[in-house]
Amino acid sequence: MCRYRRINVAPLVLLLAITSCREAPNPSREQSKAAGQAEPVSAKTAFWEMYKSAHSWAADRAPLAVVSKQVAGVKNQAGKAGMWTATFASPQRHEARIYTYSVISAAPDIYKGVTQSHPIRWGGPTQDALPFETGQFSVDSDKAYETAAAQAASWAKKHPDKEVSLTLGNAARFSAPVWYVLWGEPKSGYSVLVNATTGAIVKQR
Image (cartoon, rainbow, N blue to C red; front, top):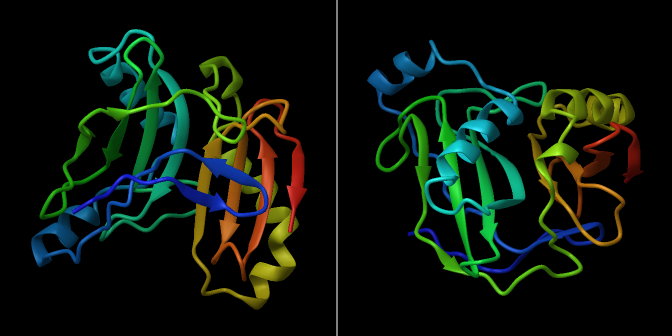
């Protein structure tokens, strides 16, 4: 069961209010074969499909977060992923909803295309989790990864087994939404923040 909770996505640099904890299952032989024909996509490709779908729920939907996910049988690479989630908030409804876009179906509960969670109560913006305008989302995930990878090259070379995750979010401390590109785990990995409007590096660790 997937539970919604307040989490600290990046303890020192970025808080997001809500996200998805959906895990990718082990693929069957048939799913692996189908997945072999599927390619990972950039965040924008997935985001606009989810954004359009969210319109039927709330015309005033505003994005809070976009997060790369793993789906069995599709390898995430170069800032592209086989599955993405986007969290939207509705100020009028005081609710938030998580949408998922996957390039394949994978049992038991991942479906190709766009799916949605049930609405949950949203208490409004906080200093660490602010909605952002779609116009501020200019830099796609593959470009953010390219910028971050150049900074992380030395570390990544020493840790070639570390997976990369990308999270887009906004907080009061930033002038625009930022991409949080993370190799490994927050406490022991390497992270780079990339401005999602300008593409400039905000911070690295």
